[in-house]
Length: 280
Ligand SMILES: O=C(O)CCC(=O)C(=O)O
Image 1 (cartoon, rainbow, N blue to C red):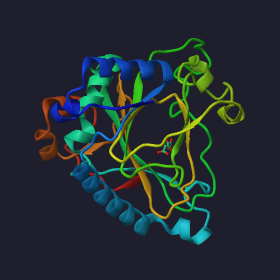
Image 2 (image 1 turned 90 degrees about the horizontal axis):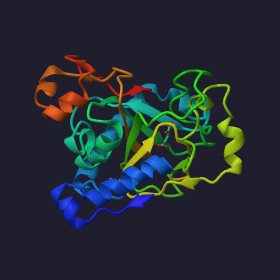
Image 3 (image 1 turned 90 degrees about the vertical axis):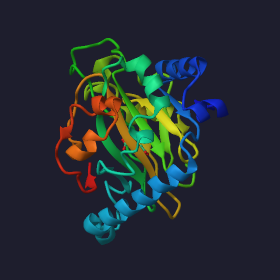
Image 4 (image 1 turned 45 degrees about the horizontal axis):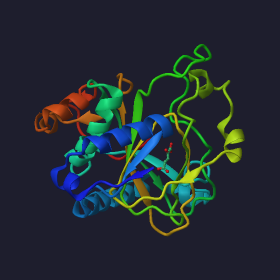
């Protein structure tokens, strides 16, 4: 569901209470919300330019498999996740601690959540097929828990280009797939690939610089990019509990971060050099 943010909210970088409530309820009930085109255009251009450079560097270094076997990355989907270096412009406050996203997540994840993924998903041109339909995380308690668990992990995506049918939009199955009993997300639960074709799905179209917040459990898949340029999504995960600590943050960078950003990244590898772009 797309929520349009008012000019006054954009100017003050503060969401009204009604907007926060609407976004929170949409995530709770529907699994996701989109705040349309909220990053300033100049910031999107800066991020897109740096991302293109990072992707070019990555493909130059690791892309032989694409060109040698002509199937593309990841079994022909040509869909690629790369971890990003924790440095400008990727660690901009409008990415890591966007006030709109935090205002919404504060209501869902409590005050003590943290960032557990600092990455990106790109649909590269030339994909042959869609990804399998999947939730991002499996069952938390194996086969044991047959009740629904609270929302504990939210993906934060920012598309760096306008996303439309021609360039590999994400396809989602909203409305209920994030509300299933925990054991449904495990290997013995219903198979999303078998059920999804009988269910309602949406291709997520959104302008560059939008914010998409979604429960990690909501079923989705990347689709092939029929265009001739990359379709990148920045991808962070905010989690109520510590999950993963692979983000390397140089100490000088950490010291310059706001108190909130320091708190958000407190479980990560502080005092380590920023990584090169790396395959997820
Ligand atoms: O197309 C996208 O950006 C989403 C892809 C995704 O979520 C995934 O690879 O798990």
